[in-house]
Length: 130
Image (tube, rainbow, N blue to C red; front, side, top):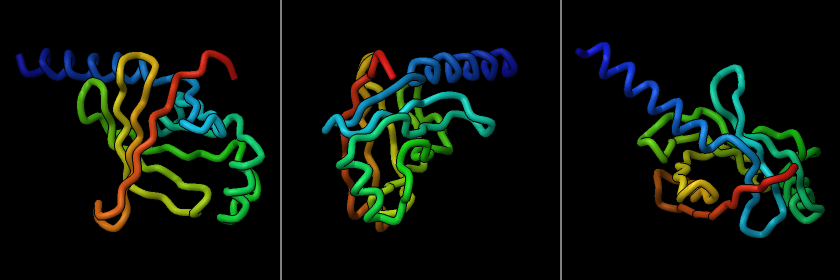
């Protein structure tokens, strides 16, 4: 009975993670991130960035934004949300964050610093190309 419950839970986790895979664009339309399988689990990598985002990253000390892994360490919280590590290229800093799916085509990404005292959220939309 316990083994069956664990198997069902693991299958639900895999199924929910399948929904988050794909390309996502930030609110300003300046960065596209692809969430996909990586050797250590799911991760998110910048696959396209606008010159404005590249300039912000360069001021943060990141020479090449495209190809930068910005989301890692996905830990399921529920069938539609994960705790993650979020790299902020413009600040050259990694913070704790949560990602929550709203339907199939929207993510709410919320990152916090200073033990949760300073937080910022963004809504990302699924991108059908790139």
